[in-house]
Amino acid sequence: MNGWTSSMGFKFSDMEKDHMLSTVEKVVGERGVATEEEITDALLREGIPKDHLLYNHHLRMAELEGLVCSGPLGPRSTYMLVKDRVGAFTYNTLISAVVALYSFCLAIASACVRFHSDKPSNLHPNGD
Image (cartoon, rainbow, N blue to C red; front, side, top):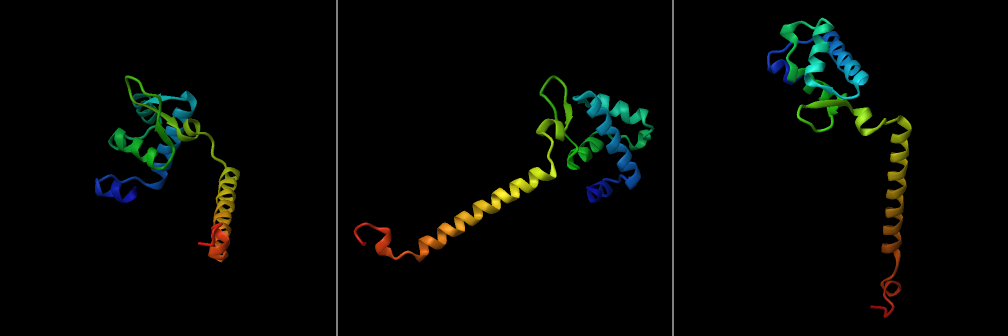
């Protein structure tokens, strides 16, 4: 994202980026669903300079950071926090998913070893 930002001529410090993201998170979190206008009004109220307030850029940055995503469809674009739209994702959920995938891979590997170690006569009733 920083490379794209620079190539478009935008210069944001890490502090400015963090301020913008925290403002977006706050307004969308408080409202549950926020429109682009509500988000950009909040950015202005937080003192983000108008020359930095490139609405689409800030919203795309928040999306690329995994903070917000599209909200419910309607006549205007809406945004929600990803954690509210998709559900809270915890470290334990990740560990559980990795353990389940690992167990599945072990079962497949074990089945492959058994399959390849059996003699052809044991695989077919006719010994073919």
